[in-house]
Length: 68
Image (cartoon, rainbow, N blue to C red; front, side):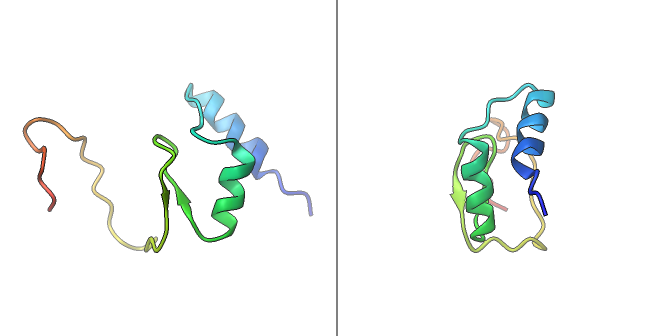
């Protein structure tokens, strides 16, 4: 089986007009080891519960420091 995830990730980044924070092959390798890579910051996260709700609110002056 040919793994096309690197090419898919690179194509997605190009379509979105963003630069990946790490080379695509490194991101895929980290994900294969169970990590999650923040595609905006490059932060490498572990022990992430994929079923946990995610707060996607932007950090603005009105909610800065709000950790609910």
